[in-house]
Image (cartoon, rainbow, N blue to C red):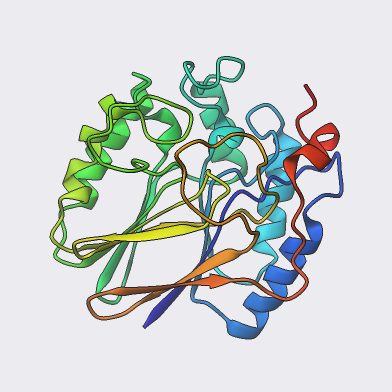
Length: 269
């Protein structure tokens, strides 16, 4: 068995003291339980898309868990498609900042019996050179007979893979075809994501889809059509021989801030 602690949407910044208690509770849990790997599935930072110091604090905090760390970017780390984030479109400079401060924005790691793949959803559908490079990587990473666990920031879809809606919440529909080599892989067993600030899970065939709760805050804005539970925490994935067991990690003492109550310290305006 190989264990992965997935922490998503930490939204850390040196300009405020928010969410430190939750990260400390999760760190204490990790020190006691000793997972094999920590994966940060995006939005490590509050505004890393424009601020080195936000990314630097986030990665320093997560490395302080004493567990090997792999991270993928979220929209608040590198920006996103101009249609959904016109004020911070993802571009080469923002990607370079993430790679310099945090590390690669896509990667794979082999562990006994499994291949763990992390992808950058924020470049998908943009037409950037990085998108084409990642598409080539996806095909390469899918060339394995191992079982596969896939980590993303945005979920591939909300309700159905064929959903044509292009919105803030999921991978752009016209970009999903690039994921086919891994989504259609016979050994795929887990697709884990964050971004929605909701905890939810469902099964499609042999594949477990898991939405990680945020480590930071929950959203009291309209999220029409999005299922899930509003809580703060993390997920623990146990990679077994031919399946994944996923459990909610909810240490005692976790705070549950609502976005409306902290907006002045996070995203004013």
